[in-house]
Length: 425
Image (cartoon, rainbow, N blue to C red; front, top):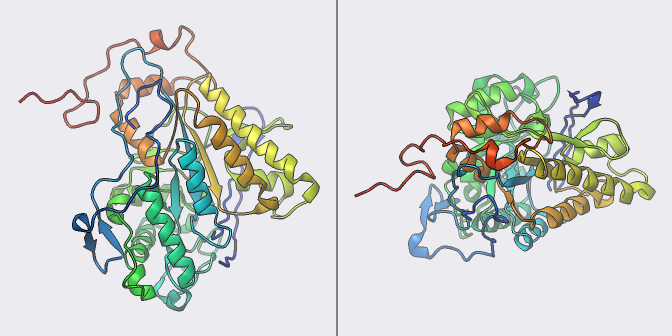
């Protein structure tokens, strides 16, 4: 599907003189202890029996029961080493002729992983209904990434349905992807963010009405309950988005840039920002996003020198693997990675991500999970334990070992929280 791509850049200084462009261009594109390898492997899931399906609204979405392939998070026991979490996420997730959404669903299944797909709401809005979108500070029907056609919507809905049934998360990348000055998301008020979020939900909840596909199968979730987090376009507008998101019941934001340390909360939301990792061949570190690697390799040219494509992909893969190993052997901070379903520089970044998934997700003590699963795990932990973990620097393992570092008796979990003792009857 055609899309006009908009980009924004910003500077981030980390470690020594590390600089990383914070940008984003959108195309259309198990219950385990610390020693477990990951969530229960997600096999293709059969749709829920018709008797278990309760349609919502026009039938675009439905309540089908608890999401399959999700595990109950466990509280760390005294002296237990934390698992190594890795989150792979996709901005503006949609299925087009490249079939990258369906491809990476398969990659996830084969490597014991679940992921987060940030859907752009306008990808479920057909071009001829574009005027239904009223973007803040822009005229009706305006979108910097275009809209979709009915085939593209049908293909995207199919992938969203199957992804959720396999245990993956469906988040949001909002709608029109406006960046920079002149109405960009960085200039939006809290109320304007609420309007944008409401419309992103509405397009998901009414895609049948807007396309006329009345007999199509629904999305198997209640989006008002499914949607708990997001990444903003171009990583802009985070402060007001977080305020709006908190009021609307969101649980996390992944729109920022951070070092490889354990996350805390901002404005009541888990700050699950992407991170800076080693950039092979350079003295500075690089943001864990395909777009940013591209900009630092070929500039804004999405198809640079073909002779360098393989090297650039290897550079991204090796940088992410170095970041992973630094955390795995060190502080065990979750590694947060962002991507797009794009074929920039000959698809080299898609190849790099696939190789990272294959390399890390089947390792001992590694869990490749969605943001929802990571947030659930964080919520289940003793706050004092998390505070200790946040005290570890980048790549810093406890000097006396994990058993000693986390040997204290944690506070009991509140009733009803995952990890709490069973209530005696």
